[in-house]
Amino acid sequence: MRFTASAYCDGGTTKSGTPARQGIVAADPRVLPIGTIIEVRHMDGRTATYVVADTGAAVKGRHLDIFMPSCAAAKRFGRRTVTARVTRAAPAQER
Image (cartoon, rainbow, N blue to C red; front, top):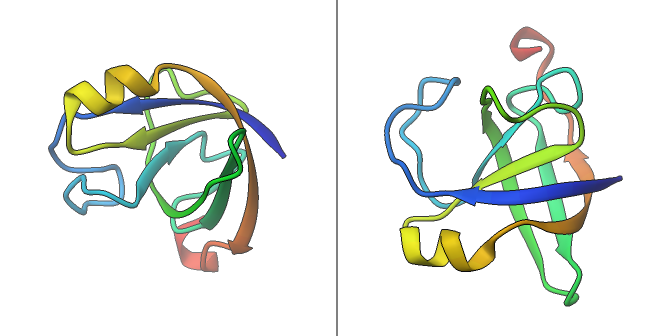
């Protein structure tokens, strides 16, 4: 599936209750429930694996918000189109 991706750097606690860290992504839980593991392919061909552990008021539909520990890197990331595929669905109790 194609998604619009942005990045965030504000730490804190995610919706899943874990601290924000690298490898975490926020998604609309109606599209990708918390606990889902996804592989994201960027338009330049790079791939990365993320755990959906957060949501956000602005994260609706096919939008991903990728956590980055550096605010400068998050700003450079901007907004871009990515392709994501589910590699492991969220456990039933987390849906």
